[in-house]
Image 1 (spheres, rainbow, N blue to C red):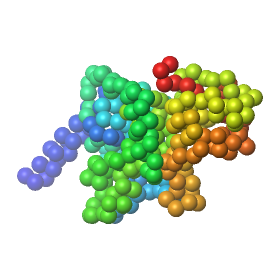
Image 2 (image 1 turned 90 degrees about the vertical axis):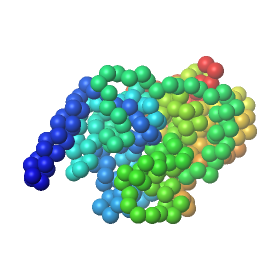
Image 3 (image 1 turned 90 degrees about the horizontal axis):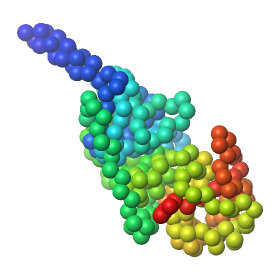
Image 4 (image 1 turned 120 degrees about the vertical axis):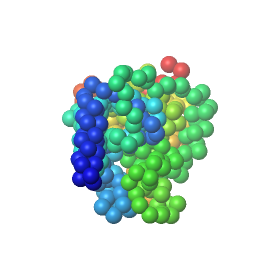
Length: 294
């Protein structure tokens, strides 16, 4: 009877897995890590249930972003990694780089047979966004991170044993990358990555202007951005950003800098452009985008 029960159980599990055909949909139950590799369990927990796979800068480069609760995914396929079932997905909430596939662990989502409503997007007022940005100062830099408190469910799903408060924050990806800082402050209203932010909102005419002139024309929440990094104007005197600094303790994080000083630093290596060149791998430019209230 035990063997028969095992066979029946295996068949039922297989049938359940087969139900996740391409064309179905899934909705994030909680904040959901989205990765660019299917072997998610090798990133979080590892063989000993206590390891987070990171590079020399302490970052999980396989993490693309963290989908907010209610995010809708289109299921493109299913991958089994041992006992873990992973869905290959796409979502309107994130524009993946060309050739990059996206994956989520099925334990973080609910399957739907029909297209569900998209996650509600409500932009907070300007002062609320600025307030969240200010309270984010000191948060660590987390590649792909856009949830300040981290994803507590990672501890339940992948990790074993007890950890210090500091370790829990690290293991649950509590922190923000550069575009994740603004994504978190706007409750996921703004595009998630810089490849979209370079064309988001309205471009300002900044070509040929120096740091002093440029600083004088900027307004709170304007974006100083290039494909790879974004800096947010906090007020007329201050810029805020999340910076990865591999050589510094903690590897960087959310920090403020005098606005004109930050512009001068940028303009030593980059020049101001009115428009980001389409299809270009521009390496020495930046644009300024005004989006709030546009």
